[in-house]
Image (cartoon, rainbow over all chains, first blue to last red):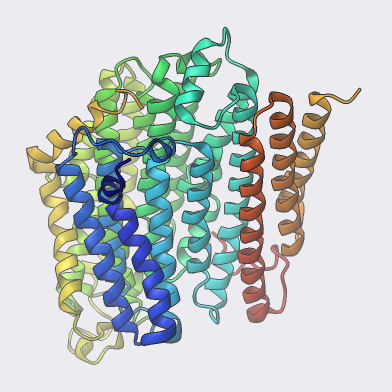
Length: 504
Length: 100
């Protein structure tokens, strides 16, 4: 028994848990000052991020964790790298939510501890090795998000967003849970490696297992807002406080995509029989992907509200990721894995950067139609630059990381023998250019209504950004340039992807 | 003689009723009750499987499901309450300020 190794291996989770409890207690007994609570939350998450990066760099081979832990929690290069990405995105989201809750200041402690508990749920979800733990951590990820969406209690749009997200989320949990009960019933276990082992010895796949897999996939699809399960997304993203949408649009998506990879490819494919299920998985994932790309891109075109444009763009982006997942359904999926992982990371950071601009603007304005962005490059050049680079990266404009991500993704799909899907993807990228550039046009090429002179007094100009937020914007901005062009990043992603199918 | 299929059919019926309720109910509290029905059909499933496979993992899972369902409903009722305070109504059809 090496309990000290346990502490080391799970530093990020423990740091987040301790910070979450500390923030609640500190809010109750020590100080209710919002910026103090924000600082505690930020320091805890930053420490967890650094810990996760360290654990990824130094994998400590030969460490034996107690069996009771390894039975339910997995530590592998995939989980460490995903944890690092999720923690980085959450830290940035917390940085951007600084001073976002001036009118509900009394609840800053609750806000930060809810975010921290949600992050904790995401971290456990990524490394869960047992469907019971997965379900509990999935709920720990979701329940705080419902509350965060309805966080502005006296704003009816926010309350409605919370209720809508809750109804859809509860439905998805119930579907998934029913699926898990069938998986348990048909193969006799909830432990993923045991499931894979049991599956290897049955002569033909039990139909209950198939039903279970499909229901679990639909539950996860609800969470990432993939096409037939996307209806909640536009309402929730536009009703929730933008600081919450910033978090909602990045970290949970990366978590769930990571878990889909782990569940369907690392665990169930451990025996190489996953494809013997009587379902055409390529077709299934293609339908989900094509549906969400077309629905997302075409519905985004006529929108005037920037938050809705971003919500539909998020649906479309998940479509590209599912296109990559469709290409993972072959005996040699390493290249597709690395493309999906890289694209998910890039998507998380670019999307977070774009939402962060709205989160910061939300301090001075309530409306977010295209007109409200007029003359942003005069009022606040740094914000406009961040918005521009993030949107161009999402649209896939050449030197940026989004382009490199799409390039790797489409190359992997083409080399898996699915050229038709590449055509679909490129067609949709072209459609998406229209609405991304519509937002950019509003921010850059339309002057503010009353000329450029009054921007100093305009309420939406807001106070100067705190130092740490400026740094975070720089990070979002430069990561869009650097991630795609720095070969070491791709090398790391490929190394992680090559470990996915090796044992679970 | 009542066997495993009977329990599974019962739970499938309950699950379908719950799903129907979630999709058609207008009243938010009614939707919450329908979701409870779905969670409890899962419990019946788990307990039946656990009993007939002589495996206790299902029973343990069942306890977790009950706990999580309680937490879920708590959050749900709180959100319904906050919508009610703002609008004085809890019909999901009429709560449609945010038409996507």
